Length: 187
Image (tube, rainbow, N blue to C red; front, side, top):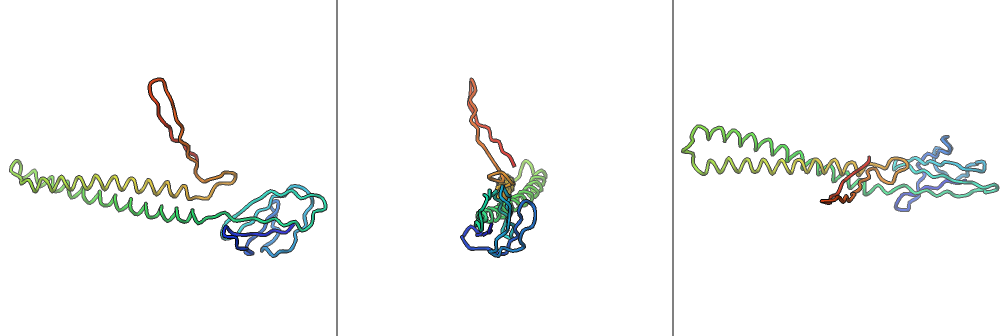
């Protein structure tokens, strides 16, 4: 058998380790045949760009059969990881803004206690505005951090034997008096 490796763009790769049935067969892909007995063999190719596996059945008398493997396309995962970092940054900025405006609003509210009931409308509006900005910042912070977690989990490589790193199903539920939906997932 001869092992060939291509990346998702179709370019050939040689800098990869080949394991067959758990044993190291080649340190680098070099185009030379690997002698194997007929039967089922598990071929694993490990490179810096990823790992790909395939089961191969070799028949009696087959020689120099080319097993062409393609590395998975990780470009989408990289974009998701970048989006996760950005979302996390926005979330952390939102949480920091929440803390700053909540503390400032509470301090200004405490100052209003000294002038009540004769406080100016501008002072009361300023305090209310700080609390509104704090509330909005908290929502942005929570959404940003939650989005970052989901994006990061989705961008993880799939575990062996599964199609994706994160599986999420939306399941409709019908009851006697009302309907609904359940969201369930697996990592």
